[in-house]
Length: 200
Image (cartoon, rainbow, N blue to C red; front, side):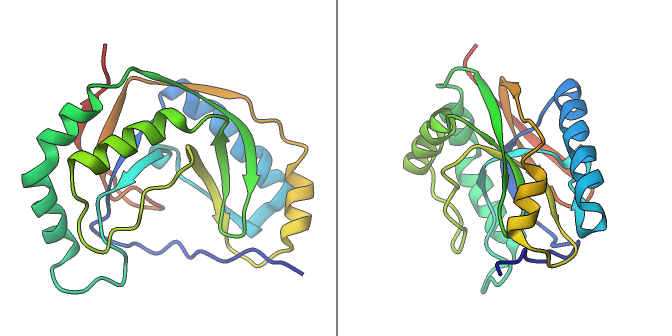
């Protein structure tokens, strides 16, 4: 039997990423979906706090098991060299209407996934051409998604999927900017560092 993977709510400091942050109306709709998840799966899951809901464009931080420079030092080297280039690159792309129409239950998390990740991937591809990520940073994802829940307990993946299948997902989020954020995660205090505006 396939089971979910427990993800403790442990603070992992100095994490940086470029992300789309949903507006208040979108947050309310996501929270409504989260509440339905909670009613179905109970304490087996924990929910992403509303103030940290986001869709990652790419991470600008090395893995937890990094070596050499500290995470902050790795980030500062990137910031000094590539912050302006990242701003210029993102400004070349038009705003995005991301249609999140799938509630996907994976072993690690429950996510809202967008039907078409191409707008995200096009920006990612251009950023990777124009900037260099810090050493040991994981490759950007190839999907457009928002993680809304993770697991406190090991439960049957198939049973979780069956229960969650009754929840409909149909949410369009208008994205006119990405933000460079520090410490987006459970029980963190996220810090907004920069705004990268998409083409008007």
